[in-house]
Length: 107
Image 1 (cartoon, helix red, strand yellow):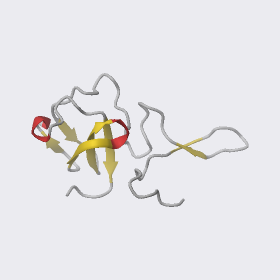
Image 2: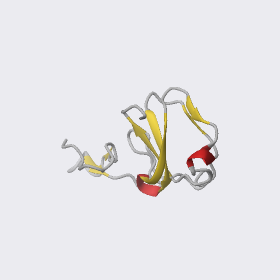
Image 3: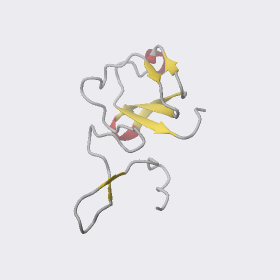
Image 4: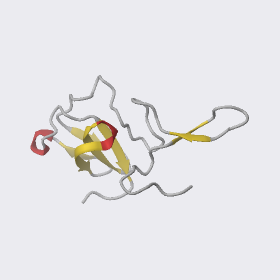
């Protein structure tokens, strides 16, 4: 599989079976759907724009974005229990719309 273009999310596609003639087509997740790597390009309304802190229990780092589709200001949360107790300091309090799981360290 070719690498994505610069600036395009690394794992923004999910495999899905569409029919017997095309068993493994690649497609982008729909809004609210989770990508293969756990990223969410549009957080569910129950938590969208309501976060004041975040904890990451993943084995990968996570970026929390101000806007849907991994756009706008973001903050990186370290892996394995990393947390940010106050998103206000990052101008993201009650303003989070998407979450991207990353293979790279924060920094």
